[in-house]
Image 1 (tube, rainbow, N blue to C red):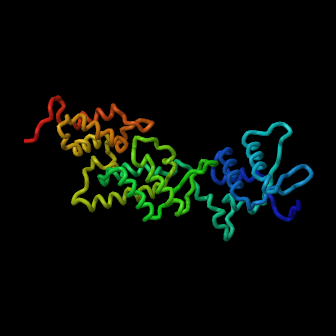
Image 2: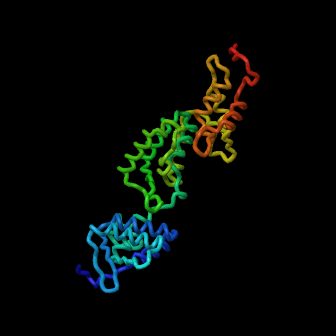
Image 3: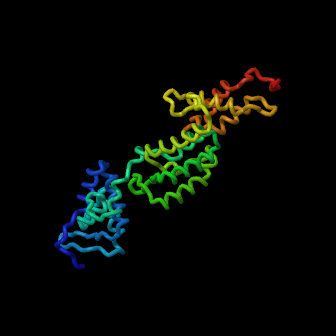
Length: 307
């Protein structure tokens, strides 16, 4: 195939090296990133380099060739199987966010991608909003979705090839938020979180969501809630808050001993106060401790009748 010799080219290895240095990534992650970008950007010509010629690959061979180059760079190549890949330098640098000429547009968006530990899982805002507003879990989920839309907060999702997170388009964000809001996890905190914790937002935007709940809570009452029930207070104690909220919520156990009713309430709201284990299941020891504090009839016997 004909090749324009006047155009500058860059090898896959050199492109990966520049990418790694610019974004401070490991070699493996940088290789995965470049591979993912080249698979997605089919408008960038890919050339196979041999000792005697350079040829542009047809689209039908492009995917298999890039996979071979990727695996060779990541894991080494079997003896006699080495191949070299070269690319149009300007197009490749722009696509990878290493060069941003005028009009590059979406080609440079990788510069907005972030590691997951620099973002907050959106689902972590639910129990905070629920505790702040005193609403049910699903109502808190709906509130968070409304704030996301009203404030135009970008939603970040993970890229399967790189493990990094990128902001998605508003229309896609709205669709994913709807899926999240109708998921089993949105209805039942004891269910498996699955991949829903990969929906993330910037820390500053996470604060916008909780601040919106705080503002409404301030308008709902003449006085603010007690400091010991405020998750943002520096001396906030989740077990204390759980015991107090359980005592406030289980006002009438309806003929049953309060201990059982308190246990039931604490299990239902365990996720809001961190009374869960690594798998998200209720921590029975923690629930028992909180129930003992909240129980106004620790000696047993029939429930006392008011008055």
